[in-house]
Length: 193
Ligand SMILES: [Zn+2]
Image (tube, rainbow, N blue to C red; front, side, top):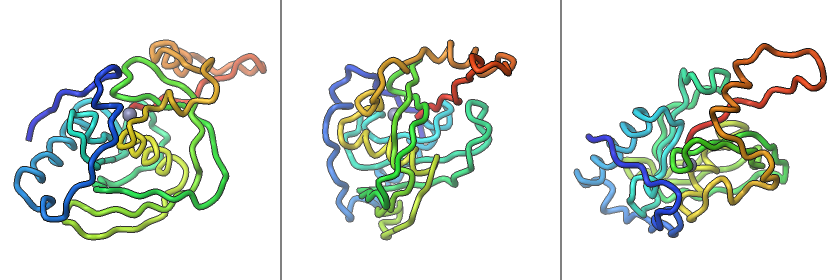
């Protein structure tokens, strides 16, 4: 296992469509080591997910895990999940806007509308088919990571660029005392993925 270098915006790998993984390659030692390194890299940088293009590998692999994370303590936990060749289908038109950040877009966060309920179909790290429904924050993380496989980053999905905020500013607001006045609106916790 190794902590991998994270590609940041401007690196062409983040704008490529990632290649599907062949079933026969999934069980190889090299492929399994890549998955382990992606998990280690996500953990090292305090992310809730990472996609292979973010570590300079243009393949359809993503990993996610949400647990006691100081950046978003109220987020529901998501067990460690590896998704290969994922396919996402929205289960309704209902969307919700919330703040996201990205390990590949350092220091910034912004409000991004995402589908509230999705069906996810993919292969797991043993090459077995998985299918499940994800909602809310869980669905948001998967949509964010899946976008990386399509050459997209969260900024491309923003509908209001005026919400783009430096993390240092949004974190300062989160830590400020809550005001009771209508002007005391607090930004939701920013997410790093
Ligand atoms: Zn990201």
